[in-house]
Image 1 (tube, rainbow, N blue to C red):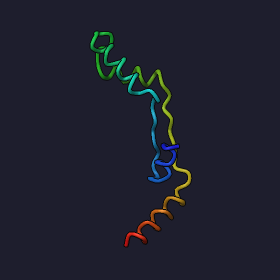
Image 2: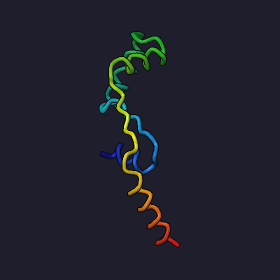
Image 3: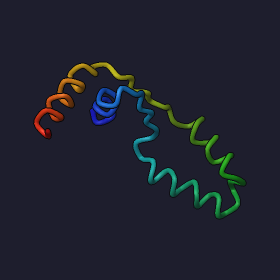
Image 4: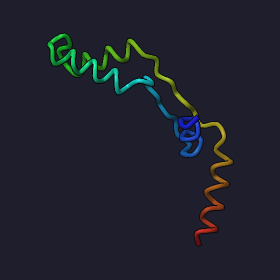
Length: 76
């Protein structure tokens, strides 16, 4: 929901990777430290092949535009 709100609010697509990115990153960095992964490029390729990328496209931008205009009126 937060990703969709961010896309709607900004009018830009939001790209979301793995939900457990912190744990995955930790494991991959440990593998790199042990020499199992040779480079950051290899690490990125492993993530790209292993986890889907979810793209949230802007859908309801008019509501956010109206809310921002209302905010600007109140702020003035």
